[in-house]
Length: 228
Image (cartoon, rainbow, N blue to C red):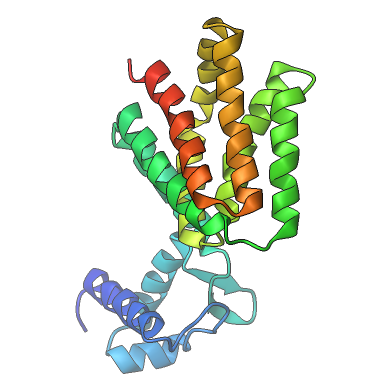
């Protein structure tokens, strides 16, 4: 037998190979510990350690009395991992904003083709709440939910997971952005609001070019008020 640590890595690599080959999919049951140990010529304790590590990172879930399965919601773990990466890797706000722009621009390209009427209605509701909410707190919350809904409309799980992870980091900036723009006067704030209106209208109309123009205008405000 090889060392337990190396053996557990062998177990992880083997399960990864099965997933990449399409032999294991979401909700599929993993081979029994005994079978994995025999196939890989490692100890059962090494198998348990490898499976435990996969469970820790959210790829595998253990079901009492049934066995180990490929997890249904491993993308939630991805969000947690990415959030920690952003928080610990001393990324600048400029880098975060640039990545957010890239994600939202791609999401926009996918969202304008969406036929999800429920999400379109949500997008409209968030716009109205952002414009006419009873308090600045409510308006700010809708301002946060509007682009998140746009990203959800993309239907791309990786785009969504990356954005949600990123959004946890940048949420604290949204209220500050609105405060800064308001301090510049009503005309500037109305232009900021108008960019949101145009973006939502573009998505509802399926007009990608109009949407890109609105998104660019929105990020001009963000860049101007926070790069310093």
